Image (tube, rainbow, N blue to C red; front, side, top):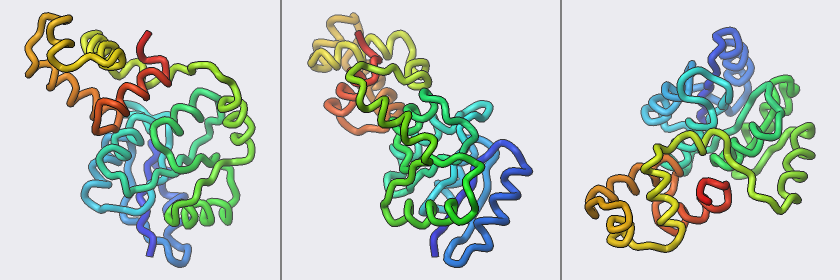
Length: 213
């Protein structure tokens, strides 16, 4: 049985998705959430296999929630289900760790297949989104993550910039006139926001997504 959590800020959409998914053989809706923060709490309690995640929600967005979920619960797959097919939404969701991206007008059979495939480790991308994705990948330019760029304080960005330059904690502390303990605290916060566990991955993401100069 594939355990599913549904996250959408519209009650009517949540109810509709629950009716569709909950009646499909082999799928079990273990909870619904109205925003990203609620989704993270629900995942922690229910440990689902797949999260159906809307993107444009008040408070914690679907992109931000996806990034947290992938960092804290790496075995949980996030399948984005949204009305948005704009380039920045597509890329932000994929960078955050989404395993697939479907639009809400996808046929019921496609939605069920996508959930089953996502749980099995496959990647599903809506046909109307695929072209945008390949175009972005084919363009050899740094694309700034619009939600990630605003997630850091000015001081965190300073620490991230020096980290990307290869400086040690002691060297960063010296540059910023802070203690090494304070730098470690900043790095813990940065790793959490990026959904990584080590310096190398943090530096790669920072450079790749234009978070540092």
